[in-house]
Image (cartoon, rainbow, N blue to C red; front, top):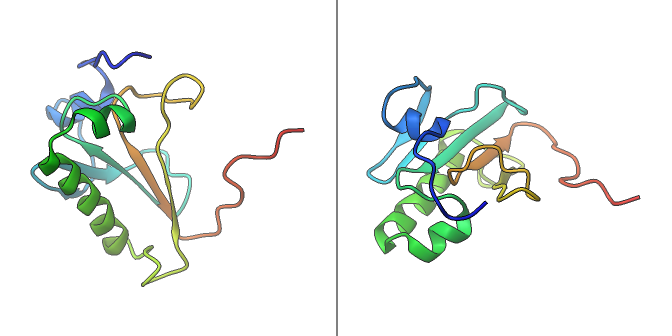
Length: 126
């Protein structure tokens, strides 16, 4: 998967208002919304509004304002959802990238998961 952004991906359609979502937080550069198929009691997706494929793409090309806004929004979502270490026993933040990372939507997004013990992130190789 190259950095060529596909503006027909589901998150681009959500950002354009073509597909509804359950918004948790919206800022100038970021949208956070509930996952349709939650894998934990708390499962929120956080996406930048800009056309970035993966975190490395975002880190390389996003403006300082976008990077700060996105990072602060992630912290605010954790606080709002009660999973931050200050409020609970923690959370997991996952961002898949590319084919080997099993990225399903080619728009940068992080999953914030919490509300229960999540187990190992990746099972050991046998």
